[in-house]
Structures are given as structure tokens and as C-alpha cells.
Length: 431
RNA sequence: GACCCCAUCGUCUAGCCUGGUCCAGGACAAGAGCUUUUCAAGCUCUCGACACGGGUUCAAAUCCCGUUGGGGUCACCA
Image (cartoon, rainbow, N blue to C red; front, top):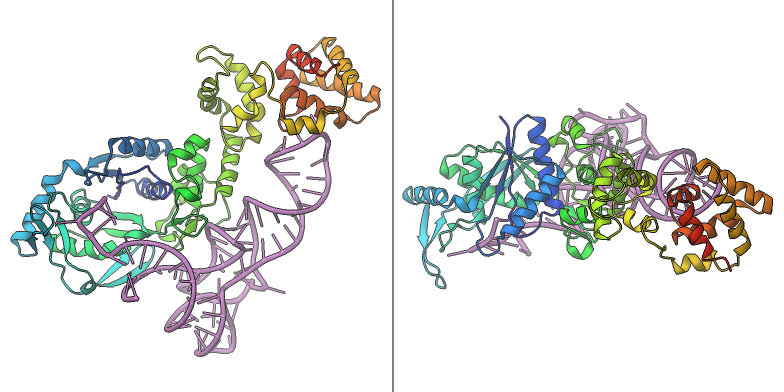
């Protein structure tokens, strides 16, 4: 039975790289009908914070990576100590006191040899362990070091495949020596290429958001982020770009993962997000938008016309780039008066259109049926009577109603605004 | 610096393992156009890469060696 693990350290948020590692582990477990295990590596008492544990768990849940088991290293110190004692007794480790510290550390005598690692992605990698100095197993404060706790846990938890970032390649020979010394069977290794920032260096806050939760706040859909992360270092081979994770379970093959590090490209994530946004269920999208509208005071929690809101969401849905665009673009439908963008006004509202606006409001109010088709017909007949092109009146009306040059079709806007609000807004520009 | 990893359009990649079908395909971005009531979407087109140098071979993006470049690791952090 395949057992993989994702082992984040709660010393910070779950970032993009961690999310991708979690994704590939999760995918592998689900594809092989194995177990996906979460191990919180909180051995660093000073830097580990419970709020980071919460943040990481929330992010993983949001991304859709459900775990089968969860462990905390901070609760397993006695296990690590037991195995360190064992190595001590077997003469494979020794105690040593550092001059600047109280207590003694337990240190592993690194055997000098050539060692070969078989990597699922990179084939064979050879190391010369004579280049590695003796490794601390248990620190002077009795807490285990990363490499030691990692090996003991991976063995105790029966991890069959260690899928992790490239940055762990040089830890691998150290860990393999430990497996051997402890008499544990070796898991299979797969080292994933790193995700880089646009500057070619490590993904850092300087070059954009790094935390998974940031993308959630920014209005990206979990499915879109999963899809994007999947495409970083892996491709289905048939030129397809849009693959949801449930389908990816069937297609994903760890041995096909690229060896090259990939650059995180916000533009492509944006495109994928837009593709998902167009197809996401409008009801679900509405659920995501409601809290934002409540926060902006555009609607009252538990007291709004949901059907009307869903129609509005449908209206804007195909043009959204991120979920959060809705509150910005549809604000005029919730505000008493639209916020007029000065640049838009400068462009379309400098000419006096009193007569045209007046005639339009009169025609609108005279409509027997107030639906999108009638509104359009009403508008078209007016411009035809006036002998002008539709666009010469469309743009000014749009800016007067919405305050913006962008947005859905004008007749839809008028329909959802209603005749009263529409006329009221137009009247402000009638002298 | 030592050790390790990597190297196809600006970016993500297909092709590489099993040399010829590749004067290298797709997507994002960029540019142009269509549509047109704006924006978004959509459609059409354009720009654009096998890092370099040696081999091996009838034939190399594909195999080998070297160079260069980029990245990672060298903690009583994880």
C-alpha cells in the first residue's frame, strides 16, 4: 500500500512551493489508492506557531487535499530519543557537549562511503559521504534535528514514497545513512523541481504573493490554482491546459514530472482562473461573493434578494478575472449614486447631452414592458430618430449609470438597475 | 569555494528514454485584425526557442564529453 506524506513546518504560511509538493503527494496517493499523511514538523519550539498550523491546514483543505492521518512531531520526542539511544548503544553515535551550550548532543558517526540514490524523477544520483560531517541527531536541548526526526517518522509511519522538493536532494544521503544505521527499509524518493520567482531566484514576497491563502484572498479559485500548480513541471502530453484535479488523478504520472525548475507566472494563473470562473456554478460563485458584499456594506447579511444577486453574478461572471473583481465592477448596482471615474467622465460626459438623455428617459418610462429586448429597441429607435450612431450615446449613458467605461452590455445594465434608478442617474446630467 | 541538480520561444511546456515523420508543436504573454455598445470572452494572423563547442552517426533537439549559464545544499533551521 502506497503511503506518502506532506511534512510542512509551521514556521510560516503554506506557500506556493509547499502547495505544489502537497498536490503531487496527494495526487500520487489518490492515484494509487494509498494514504496521504500529514506530518507537522514542529520540532523547533521557538519558530513554530499554532496559528501557522491552522493556516496550513486551512490552505490544504481549501485546495482540496484531504489527508488520511495527521501527526505532530512535537508529540513524538520520546520516540526520537529512543532511537538515538539505540544508535548510541550500538556505537553508531556519540555524545558531545558544545562549549556554548548546556547538556550534551547526540551525534551520528557518518560512515564514509559512496552511496547511490534512485530517484523516480532523476534516475540515479551518486554521493560521496566522506564529504559529509557527523550529524547531530538530538540537540543539547533534547529536541531532534530535522533529518533524524524525518527518517524515524518516515520509517515508523511506513512511508513508501518520499516526494519532496529538490532542495532536499542533499539531505537524502544523510537520511539514507540513517535508514541503514537504524535498519529501516528505504522508501522510494522523488525530488520535485523548485518553483522560482520571475526574477529567477526563489519565490519571495518581493516578487508577489507567496502564500496559498493570499491567492484565496485575492479571489482565485482553488481549482484554478490546483490546475496551474499541476502544470508547473508536468504536462498531460496532449497540449491540454485545463485539467481539474479529479481528472489529474487518472492522468498524473510522477515519473513524467520535469527536472527543470519552473517560474511562477501570474499571467497564466490569471488566464486559468478566468477559464474556471466562466464555468463555475453561479450559485457557488455567489456564495463566494456574498461575504465580500456584506463586508463592503453593499448588502445586509441574511437580508437580500438572492435571485437578483445570482442574476447579477451571471451577468459579470464571464468577464471576471478574479472573484474580487465583482465587488469593484458591480458597485454601481449597490450604491445610491455611482462612483464616477474622472477619466471616464472626461472622455464621455463633457458634451451636453441633456436633450438626448431627456428623450431617452421619457421613452424608457413610457415602456409597457421593461425587459432587455424592449430597452434595446427603445434605445435603437431613439438613436435612429436622432440620426446618430448608437455608440455616441451608449458610452455617455454607460458612464452616467455605472461611472465606468467597462462592464456588461448597456441594456442589461439598465434592466438590472431598473427604470427608476436609471432615469434618476441620467437626470443628474440634464441641464 | 566544495558537492549536487538542471539547460527547447519572454514564461509554462510537447518532442528526448526507443536518433530520421521537427527548417521543432501547443498554451500564456506581446503585437495586429475581426466582432462591436465599452470591457472581458471568442475567432484569425504575426512575433518568437533546441545555451555554446566538440564528438558518435548516412542522419542529433534527441546519444557521449567538455564549456558556459542558472539553481540547490553545505546549522545543535526545517
